[in-house]
Length: 246
Image (cartoon, rainbow, N blue to C red; front, side, top):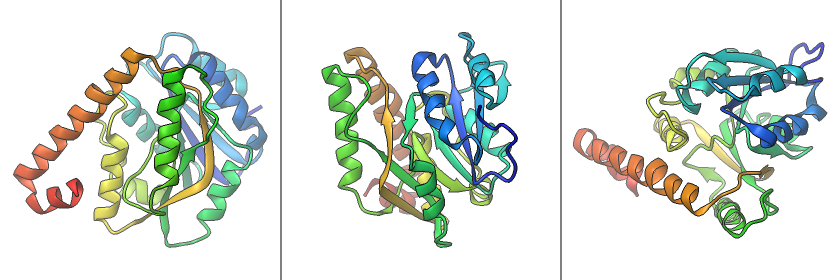
């Protein structure tokens, strides 16, 4: 059981969920190895499929929100309730690897690291072509990235709690899963905090992508919000715009 007789957790794992289904069960299963050492906080974001009951049955600490306000707000709520000084943020359709939490804790032994992000592994959960393409492309991008990162990642990102609160957490104005993690990473870098890309910290993405869901995500949840943010920065903070768009 998750969180059974847990005291002084190594870190707090925050998982927002909205109608998580079978992938959410697999997400929780992957955390059971760390039940005695990590605090698992599930934030039920106004869901209607009973995911909060699944989380309670697993022994997770459950916070129920009556109305869905999006994963950014749910993560903020979960982080605020965390008992540990270190927070691992992950999505409800992501499995962690057995060594993931240990690697996160080891990375934070370096006091200069304020936050870190991991990578999808090279064996996505869904087997259809679009899911394999999308997730493997994401894996490739992170494996080729600079270890001195300039962004954050909500699917597998960890951060010191005091720093998360100091920079204001995620922008809860984003009601869909879009660029709230990118914006958080930008604010961390603007405040001169170090974000490390740890290419050997893996999680498995279980999402089944379809042509419709992929186009909706890429256009409405990524491209358009990003364009709106860049236009706002260009008008209000030209210097920051040049840094963010470079």
